[in-house]
Length: 150
Image 1 (tube, rainbow, N blue to C red):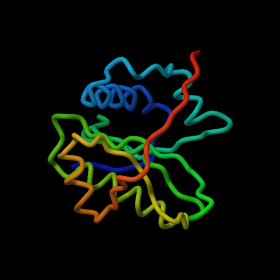
Image 2: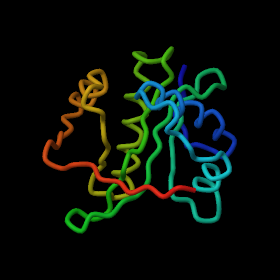
Image 3: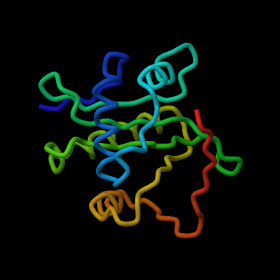
């Protein structure tokens, strides 16, 4: 049986392992450069900027939904789903659905106006999964980022 619960500080190592697994799946295994200290502090320090739900089976973290709050001048407070990942051996067992459903329920309870996220255009399994939620896919906006070396 899988349990969906709020992430705790002690989950960070397992969560980072899943994040690195996702990066490898997305063909960017070296892109995860955040330190464990920064990751833990950013989620559980004095001024946390992210929250997460984890999926646990037999005392092992097998999935996570990591989010943060963003603000839209047009829509108000919205949740940004940064990562939704289930370990490869557990995919197809409905864990991603349980995590996303819990995240959606929490966002509704907190009165957010919606949830946003990104998906790679070649990730057909994820795209098909999100289509089941009648998610809207935006082909108009282009992702832009500015990185600072640390």
